[in-house]
Length: 267
Image 1 (cartoon, rainbow, N blue to C red):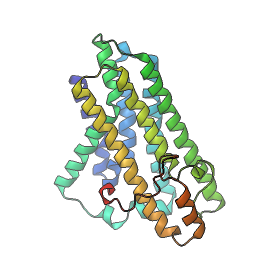
Image 2: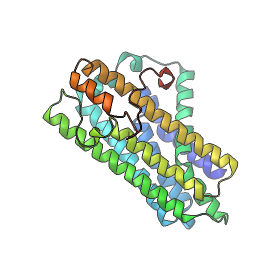
Image 3: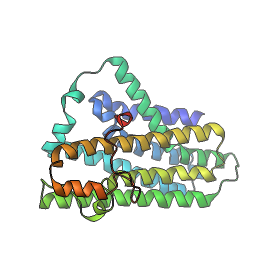
């Protein structure tokens, strides 16, 4: 359990940036926490670190640093993003207890997300007969997810430079409306897949599964917020209406076209 306490303490420390501004718990605090936890996992279990798990930790590190830096630059350069970031519901001072509970929830979630790689290495160090094939599969899936996310972000930026006032329906956005969120879901699916070859105990499965379910919930909640904003902005555009009726929201080829009415996704 000592390694989990170390990771949890690190998660609390890095995500504490949210005390500067509430939203940072979920944005730059999230990105930097994932990067820090991936490095810490590799360092703690350096003696048994395998190549596929090292690749996964590297993928998660790159993802976290890229996300945090992207959000920091976006906050500095984008007026529209600042408007969303600093809307009244975010700037209203939160009670101390609420802030503490959010901080705690985020720190626990981030450890849960990183836990599959941690459990794999911990069990390997104890002599468990782990299966490296699952680790390789997870690393490849996670890497593919990050690539999809990076390509989606680049395609959106390119499209907005051409026409900043039109919704994006080119490139990966022809297949799914939130390809960046899909890429992240795929990345964490790859991380979770490692559990199948990690000889996990029941409590390890519980922690890893809660972490996976938690981040998938966050992605669908984010997709819902984006859907509501886009409907408000482009709702009267016939092209947009046709686009959202034929293009799945977050998972390609899965006919989920809207989650706007699912208030339980409100985050």
